[in-house]
Length: 380
Image (tube, rainbow, N blue to C red; front, top):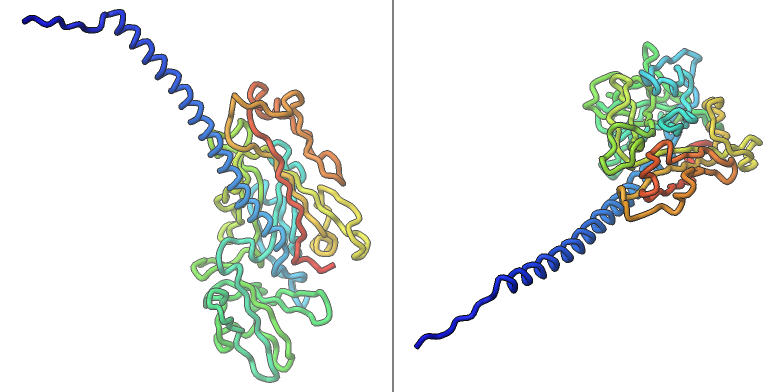
C-alpha cells in the first residue's frame, strides 16, 4: 500500500522564517535596550559610589587641615629652612620657609577655570605613620620615655621620621623644636635613652613636648618639610572613555618628601568639569563669619588659623556616560552657574563651549556641595 506524504511548501517555509526573523529582531531590540539601560545605571551607580568614597576623603582632609602644624619655626629665633614642592603649578602654593598655612588655594588656576585646593597637615599623607603621635614629659630631673598607647596600631614605630612641637602653656603658641644644625626632624625611639636629647624637654621644666609622625621608617630620606601636604585638583588626560570631552578626574596628590614632586594622583571622582572653593572668614575677633570669599592668597599662616571658619566646595561632574535617549533638563541653556549663596556666581560654566555643543545635553550633570569646618585651626 502506498501512503501519501505531505510536507511544507516553499511559501510556507518562507512565511515561517520571516515570522521567526521578525520575532528575533524584536526580542534583540528589547534586549539591547535593556542592556544599554543596565550599563547606564551601573555607570551611574559607579559614579555615586566614587562620590561617596572620594568626597569623604576630601571632607576628612579639610576638617583635619592644620593638624600638627607648628605656629613658629624655632624657639630661639634661629632660622629654620625647609623645602616644599617643586615645579609649576605646585610651587605656587609654597610657604618659602615661613610658618606653613593650613589651607591654600589657586582661585581659577586649574583646568576650565577651576580652583586648586592645597591642604597642609601631618595626617594628610596616606601612611599610617602620619596619623600616629605621642608625647614626652620631663618630670623633675629625670627624662621620661615617650608615651606608649594601649593600641599598638596607634604607636609610632622606631625610626619613623617625626617632628616635635613645644606647646607654650596658657597660649596658642606651638613651636617647632630643632636639633643640631637646625635640623627640624628626628627619628622616633620609644625610650628616652635612645630618643635624641635635643628634642626632649629640658630637665626640671615639667614641660610636655608633642611628637608627630611624618614619614614611615622605610622613607630613607631627610624630610623636606615639617608637615605633609596634599594638592586637590582636576587632572586631564587620564579620564575614563565614558567621560565627556574636556572633563577630568578630581585627584588628591601628596607632595613627596623625597623630591618635592606631586605624587601619583589618587583618583577621587571621575568626569569632573569644575571645582570651586569658598571660605567663610571671621575678621572681627571670634564674632562669627563676617565675609565669604573665594581667594585667601593674601592671608598668612596666623590669619588662616584665626580667620578661616568654614570651607565650601562645589564640584561639577556628570553621572554615568553619554546617553542619547536622555536629554538634560537644562539643555535650552547650556550655562551652569556654580553659585554660592553668599558670594554669588563662582563660575558660569558653558557646557556647549567646554564640552561639546552636540552632546553636552545627553549627560546627567550634577553639582556636589560640601560645607565643612576645619577643626584643627584655633577654636572659635
